[in-house]
Image (cartoon, rainbow, N blue to C red; front, side):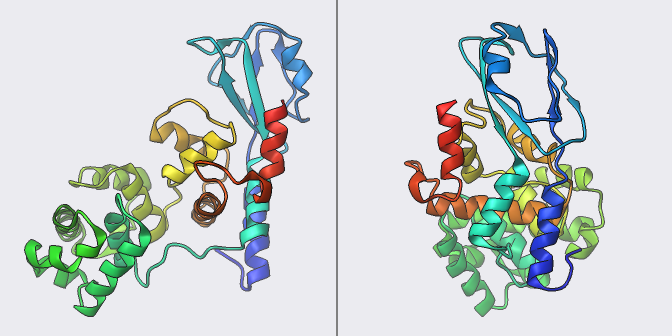
Length: 299
C-alpha cells in the first residue's frame, strides 16, 4: 500500500519501479554481462549472431533490451537494439507529470462502467454518459440489473455506439450478479488469471476492457495496454514491429514488479504523455523523454 503523504507516495512508486529486472541475453559469442550498460560496439562488431530464447533473468540495474530485427524472419541475423531503463522512463514521467490518481470514478462499479463505455470513444463523451447515469441513479448494480436495454441506451447515448454498449453493460451486470451476487468486492477476491478468463468470456469485453476492470476497479496487478501504449513503444523504437496485445503487455509485466499501484500510475503516465507529446507526429523537442529518443535514433 501507499505510504501516507504525496512525497512518500512518489518515493514508494519510484522504489517499486527501480526493482525492475533486466534481461540476460545469450548470443552465439557467449554471455553479455547484464551488470553494465551495453556498449553498442559490442553488437556492431560481432557481425551476424543469433539470439536464443527464452532469455534468462538476472538481478542487476533495471535494463530493458528491445530488438529491431532487420532483414530477417527469425531472431537471427543483423540486429539493432535500444537499451532503456523502465524505471528511468517511469521516474522521468513522474517528475514531469506527478501522480495521476487514476481511474476517474467514485466506485468500482463506476470504474467498470467507464471501462466499457470508453471503447472507441473519447473520455469526454464517457463523462457525459456517466453523468446521465448518475443523475438517473444508475451507478448501482441493482438498478442496472432491472433497467431495460432500450432505456439504458438512450441514457448513455453521448458515449456513442450506445445500443451496442448498453447490451455490453447489461451482459457485464448479468455476469456480476450470476457469478458474484452483484458484488465487485466479491469478484475482486478471485485469483487474477481466473477472473481475467471469466471477464473475457463476457460478450463485448476484450483484453483492454477486462484489464482495465481488473487493475482499476478491483486492484489486480495487471498492466493495461491501449493504443497509447503501442504508439509510445513505436515512437521510441522500443517495439517497432506489429505484435499482439499480450506480447506488448509482457514487456511491462516481465520487467516490473507485479504491483497494481505501479501499473496504475505507469499506464496513466503513458496516456498523458501520448496526449500531450507522443502524438502520431511526436513533439519530441518539448517531451520529457525527447533526449532519450534522440539518443536511440543516433544509435
